[in-house]
Structures are given as structure tokens and as C-alpha cells.
Length: 276
Ligand SMILES: C[S@@+](CC[C@H](N)C(=O)[O-])C[C@H]1O[C@@H](n2cnc3c(N)ncnc32)[C@H](O)[C@@H]1O
Image (cartoon, rainbow, N blue to C red; front, side, top):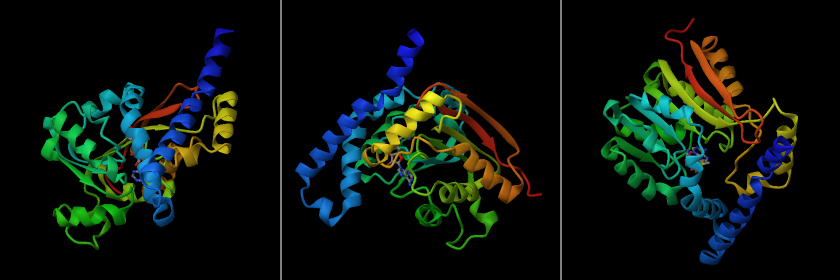
């Protein structure tokens, strides 16, 4: 009985988020009544930012704790994909080992708080914000400008500059996951690691799987900044690695909360040192 009750609570967790999201869409409309007509993407960005600035910290507290140890070991040159307002930055608990982090975040309304949070956790000048998406075209110009990549038509070898690429709850919302993952893969050094913490499709619990289908059907994606509850994100990485290098050197992923509608995959994928 207790189990059924816990499952029901879990399956219904999107209800308050629907309500909050509708509230922040309305607020964005009241503040910018012409924006939906002139720039709908910017309107959606403002609505999502309103929600995230209010609840991002609470969401961050619900992140699987396994990721803390992984980010404590972060070092070198890092790409932080979709950091939002930077509520996860405190998990980079050894900033002294980090040379630079590039945070690529399309939500421009979140950038001030992102920079402030980077400052708070001792990453200050080491954290560079890129207003863009998880795609090569968005990221490359800044890397070239900073001299991290030599020119804007780099060879595959010259492009693979990052020691680590961090994706925490972001790849659920990129418009073309396969394309983004392929671009990210190309930017990771041989021997470098992807640190992933993503909620994914639940193929281990039929109830949670059905609930995910239901919430997607009734508009979760539209109301939650493009978030798709049903992506098989690890599979997307494995596919790209197989095509490019015959696979990863090491796959250390675990599935957390396997009965939940927001089950997560957490862990590290290590790129091979050399091509076969
Ligand atoms: C659910 S929030 C998570 C934020 C942060 N990673 C955290 O866990 O607190 C998803 C973030 O991904 C960003 N995002 C959406 N589409 C993106 C894209 N194509 N490339 C990079 N980031 C994206 C959103 O703007 C948002 O800040």
C-alpha cells in the first residue's frame, strides 16, 4: 500500500510544475505583451527563466548525490553544458584543480545569476559564460577568440580541447540531441571524460514509463522549456562513440531511482585515447 502511494506521488509530481509554469508564462506575457508576436523564442526564454530563478535552487537540491563525487574530481579545461543559473556550481568543490570552465547557456536572463553563483563558489574569473547552445557553431567562436582553438576551421585533432564535458539535466531539452552529442564528442580530448547526470526514459518500470508518456502528451515539453521526459541519453552517447571510435574506453553509468518518472542516469563516459 505504501509503495502504491509513493508511486502515485511520484507520478503526480509534474502537477505543481504545470501550475507554476503557466503562472510564469502569464507573468512574462503581462510584462512583455508584444514579445510573443515579435520573438516567441525570447518570450519562452523569459517565461522559463522566471520559473528557474525561483525554483532552480530547489531543483538542484534534488539532484542525485552521486554527482557530487564526480564533480569534486573535475580538473583542467571544462565545458559545462546548460548550467542554468549555476545552482550546481557548488558541486565543483575543488576549484583549485580547474583551469577554466566554459558554461554554455542559451537563457540570457539567467546569466547574471550564473556569474554571481560562479563567484560565490570560488570559480569567479575561471568561469566564462557563452550565450549559446550545445552546438559547435555556438561554442567555437569563443574558443577561437580565447585562443583555445587555433582557428575557426580546426581539424578534428585541434578541436578536441576539453578535459571534461559536464551535462547535468540539460540533454533532455536540447532540440536535436543526436547532433549536440556528436558536437560535444568532437570537442572532448582523447582520454577525456563526460560527466553525465540526466533524467531519462524509464524502461525499467512500466508504471513510470506510462506516466512519462502521459505527461509528455499533455504538454510537459511546451511548458518546461523543451524538456523531454523520454530520452535515452546514454544510448545517444554510445552510438556516437561507436561511430567515431568504436566505443568508449570506459562506461561507468548507474541508474538512480529506477521506479521513478524522473529516473536519472549518473556517471562517467571516458573517451578512448587513440582511434582504432
Ligand atoms: C533543467 S535546466 C538545468 C540547469 C542546470 N544544469 C541545473 O541542473 O541546475 C536546463 C538548462 O538547459 C538549458 N538549455 C536548453 N537548451 C539548451 C541547449 N540547446 N544547449 C545548452 N543548454 C540548453 C536551459 O536554458 C536551462 O538552463
